[in-house]
Length: 190
Image (cartoon, rainbow, N blue to C red):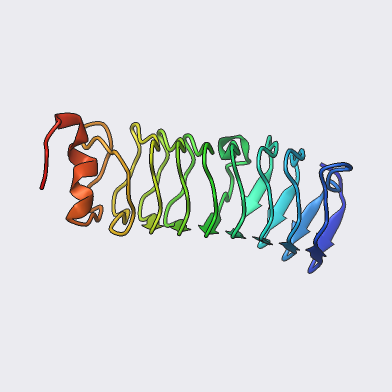
């Protein structure tokens, strides 16, 4: 990583797909209406940054630091968040499309996913203790040996969670969401 340090800057309507983004540390910066799709973000640090209306689909994240980063109305298709730097990894998402992303083995305690599409997302072996899934579509999402204790799924749909291989103690589900816990038993609830 270079020693370049960028603080309190706003980046608007920039297309980074041709030249990429400058390597360094970004702190308290905002990115609005930017296209970063396919860009290599490896070894770049983002601290207390916000991305709004950005396309970050298929970015490379090897060693990328995301510390207290918020994404709003962003397209984040196929991102391998599990390649990011784990130390102080902290992200929240609102109105985002995260289909085909991977959070494999990440610690996501108390993180928020609000109004997000999480189709075919891999949460295998992740720690989602206290996470909030508010009005999210979890079709095909993978929960395999995932810690979901105290997680809130009450307003989310299309999830399939096997209580026998995931830790779900004190997790919250709505009555209509119970089918997502019973699917493997081929039970019909009406």
